[in-house]
Amino acid sequence: MDASDTFAAERRAVAASLDIELARQRLTTLGRQFRLVRKESLLPDVETGVEFEREVEVERDEDTGRKKKKFRRSLGPTFEIEIPIFDRGQARKAGALLKIQQAEDELWATAVKVRSAARLASLRLETARRTMTYVRKAVLPQAERILRGTQRDYNAMQRSVFQLIAARRQQILAGRQYIQAQQAYWLALVRFQQLMSGSLPGGAGMQQLEVAATPAGDGSGGH
Image 1 (cartoon, rainbow, N blue to C red):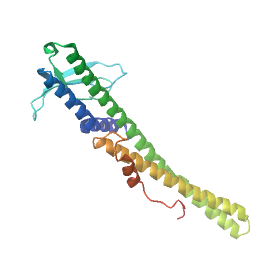
Image 2 (image 1 turned 60 degrees about the vertical axis):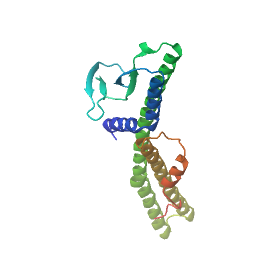
Image 3 (image 1 turned 135 degrees about the vertical axis):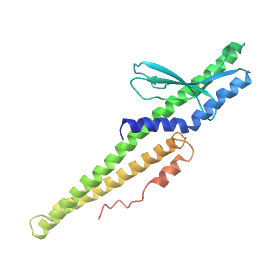
Image 4 (image 1 turned 135 degrees about the horizontal axis):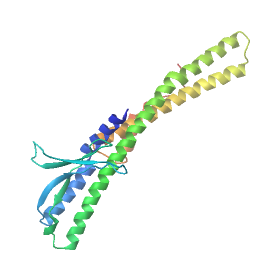
């Protein structure tokens, strides 16, 4: 998974996030509650900690008719999250402004959290996939070769029974290592897919999903 795949996963997670949508709806509801006129929808870049040159483009969504501002960074991809913007001059009470600001901060923090979770989930999934592939293609075959060679030498009375047992034990351990690598991969995949479907990891039912996604294995490592 290269950088472009990671960025695509981040954008997909943000677009699908139920947590972001709930935070956005809370902000919109507050605006209506205080009878604030909605001015526009802002689509800011959530990338942080990087120096950049900012370019602004204004577009109108063909489906909703909403105006959108795109903030682009020269050192990274465009990242968008829609935030309702209200005319604060109409809010005559400080408490109303405070609640609006808190709701905006919550929406912003949720977007950053979702994006960070998507980036981490992508990296963990790729790491788990590479580990599983390495164990399958390198560790398991090597353990099998050592066991076959030791068995051949034992039959020729060139190795002791203890050496044969040790080789067999290593082959079993390699099999268990592969099963563990499979489990780590499937758990990483479940977490990644959960994010892509709109939910942050750790929600209700996550444990059951992880158990269901874990492949069965007897841990014998035999082939």
